[in-house]
Amino acid sequence: MASVQGMVDWKRKPINRDKHGGTRASLFIHFLVVMTNITFIGNVFNMVTYFRQTMHMDVGRSSATATNVIGVSCAFALVGGFFTDSYIIRFTGILFAGPIEFLGYVLLALQAHLPSIQPPVCEMTEQYSNCKQVRGYNAVVRYIGLYLVAFGEGCFRANLASLGGDQFDDNDPAELEQKSSFFNWYTFSVSLGGFLGVTLLVWIQGNRGWDLAFTLAAGLTLLGVIAVASGFSFYRNLIPIGSPLTRMLQVLVAAYRKRKLPLPEMNEEIYLEYSKENNVGEILFHTKGMAWLDTASLSDGKTGDWYICSVSQVEEIKIVLRMLPVFLSSMICYIPMTLVQTLSIQQGGTMNTKLGAIHVPPASLFVIPIVFQLVMLVIYDRVFVPFARRITGCPTGISHLQRIAVGLIAIILATMLGGVIEKKRKGVSEDHGLLDSGSPVPMSVMWLSLQFFATGIVDVIAFVGLLEFFNTEVSRGMKSLGTAMFYCNLGLASLMGSVLVDVVNEVTRHRGIGWLEGNNLNRDYLDRFYWFLTILGLVAFMNYLYWARRYTYRQHNRAATS
Image (cartoon, rainbow, N blue to C red):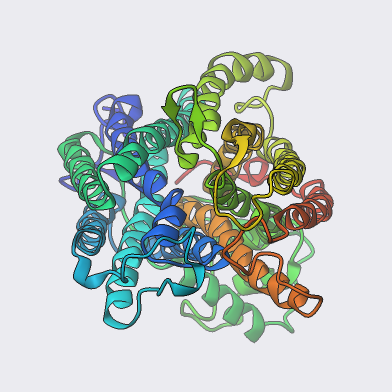
């Protein structure tokens, strides 16, 4: 029987490598990923339409609320990641999150179905000043439903990718390649779910009602959780080894208490003395740099976790601190991404949405980048990675940070295209005397496919690179938090995007009118905002390159698991 240290089956017995884990176990995870992304992408990316038409929010607030939901779901990933790394196995965390997200969709379905908890019916395109937003108790119902969905989605995000990564052993070359492939197929599952969401679910929203769409979302979430639960006997489960936040805090406290102790001339002396104490899930080699933390592993005669820490424990926090500049710089680069996605939907709502005899909902334009993602992910995993691997010797073909950089360039391209297209859209609107009419601008919504295509490149390249970077670099004892850091990266970018909209409106209001302040997009200055995002993206990208070039991958310093 070939086992993997630290991994157990559902009976808490050591696993058998030949029976547990691997690609077979990951299939159940991929199914739930597809189900949750049908519901989340299909609903959230088109929810600006629901907020505008049914809840009567203005342009800026509807976009900000949608990005807030995305951002909060990513922040909740930190909560889910913390508990599964510290106290419960990831499989249990997934089973806990499912009913919470299910309940959130049920509440949203009830509000969409019952007129008594909706604002009065009003035509937003004709009666801007007379439309009342939902208030009081009815607004509370909406926000509870939205943030229950966000909480459940956050827990899923923290644990699904991490549980999938646990099915492969980093110290087995063949399984390490399979693990890299898993993250590509994980993103493929995200894209497949998104494809079904922006086609099937968006069609239901527009033709059968939001109440049915939210009800279907609740059902699909429940189905996905049942599918994952049915694979319980195949999983490799990592036993929680305590709070990673506590371990890192212990290092900081111990290092401060012994800050005046001199370090030994030979760093190996520290490693040899304490390497057998493994409390981070694996043994990590001592590395140079951040010497002020090394005193935490020196003995001053006192004992206890808050006085002396293992070298692996010190290296764990070093890894996190080294990742922080990459985390922050890539987060700033991602700020324009969610804004482009939500604002593009609102652009499409003012344009000609007919393609021949077919009506194309603006949110369904996401099918363009998603189809591109599905094709490119297969090509990338099956063609590019094996080819690049032979040249570079890197299991992933190219490094994670190189892959991220290519994707971040595509974000800049998307905002540039958005500015050009919006300028043209406003020009057509003015030429036809439609600035204040509320009628669709005689310009095909398919123009937006260009900027959607650019956002598709981002998800193929940068999304997978960031996910694998954060999951791979952290220690085994904080894999869920590593995945949560990735989603927190995206979430903070979404929240900062909402803040950015408010700040830009406040600043530009003093010069006349806020760029995104009114209900009439024809009178707003979305084109200027896109060019502002382009400049922000360029500056942020140069900052990312500065930190990425100075990052040292921790795999070069990793020992075998104990």
